[in-house]
Amino acid sequence: MGRPRESEASHRNGGHVSARDGAERLLAVATAGLPAHRAEWGAAMRAELAALDDADARRRFAHSAAAAAIRRGYGICLTLALGAAVIVAGVVLTASRVQLHAVGPGVLPATVVVPAAVLLVVAFLSARTARSFRFGLMTGLMALTASFVAVFGVLAVEGPVWMDRRGVFMLDGDPPRQAVGSAEVMLDLFTTGMWIGHLMFWLPWLLVGAALGARLGSRRGPSTAAR
Image: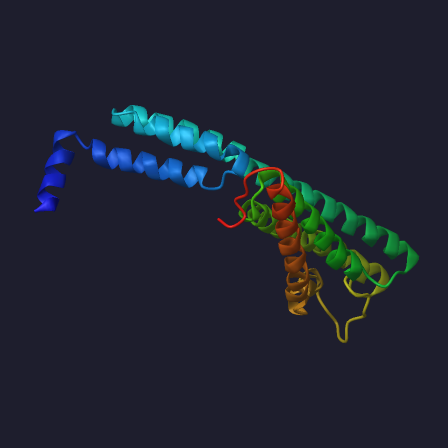
């Protein structure tokens, strides 16, 4: 009995129900990742959307508010993630160049320890600012992904240089047991399985940073760490 009524209401409103639902879903998803200090703004946008009746007006408002929400929430995550990637890439590249000339043991300490420290700081700062463990975790995971790409990119570019000049792999400074091609050198991080070790070492520091940031941030105001 309930379904025919819903269909009749949808027909009378000229399809406004489905349009309204689509706008609400869009704005709900866009504002879900907002940090705690932006939560009231997100709630206000959803309330303003609920006050609109026209389907086109609702759709335009939802798109505009969703774009602003992404800049306010996910934009912060992206900025920190890209910043982390730039720092990691710079440090690994510097370590490569220094050790290449100094006949060093490889850049493994730089690719493992430095990103872990950067992720700790990024997760801590984002969680403390937003007073949210979830926001710190989300930002940290984005930074982890960007940092991993940065590490792989530097290894892929610098690895062949190490093999050509010193005849060793860039990560650990070990010589190959047999002849290797450029592709094998570039993919050394994956073929040796060391990518797993990198991620397993990085992840706990990310979690610690997010937890500490949320705990300290909650002392300055309402916390969303448990959400």
